Length: 289
Image: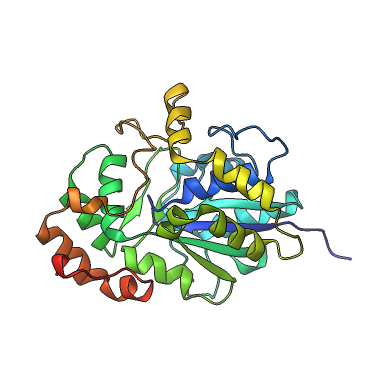
């Protein structure tokens, strides 16, 4: 018999698309307590894929001493080590785009993977949320980032490794159009409309062997209401909030782009991303044309 291995269910998204909210919903659903989940504890989720300390522990040396290419060459082996050491199922957040190397290896290998939950959000709202999240509140800077085919996150000695994003459309396609790992797409806007329905979809997709507990679904949604997350952040600062940002949980709405983006900025985003937007039901409004 071979070794018993776990699996990783990837919670993938472009930054500021609702990934953290989904993680908190899952933590409340799968948690052993009926009390609200502590937003500063991972619960059933196992952090973000780019955690630097995990790589340093695996390598036995500081990953900050390595080049980006050197890190990429061993990154998949770190995930393999994770599921070998712990045979349970893992939920892991990821902002990197999925990549396949010339030798056929995947950055996020199917051999260690269960499913992908890809959370997608209207890029017009992503641009606004990202500007506030990054603390500069410069909408044009965020618009450029979403359109940058060389877009990335993290570098140097930050707590997270360098993460290759590509543009917003490239990121979505890298996960949604790969066929090596089963993928379920969840729209942030659908989570806003009915978080319980979307959470149940995720649970059914990732854990088909279990029946969905509707009572726990309702409890998880209640505990993860946006107003309650904001109160929790007020009571104890959220560890994932960048030092330059005023807060992590800001509005949690759809359509806020109308309050912040110029017509030129909207046009720029539409020109770059209209195909993926149309594919996932993001209406190209006349007022934005």
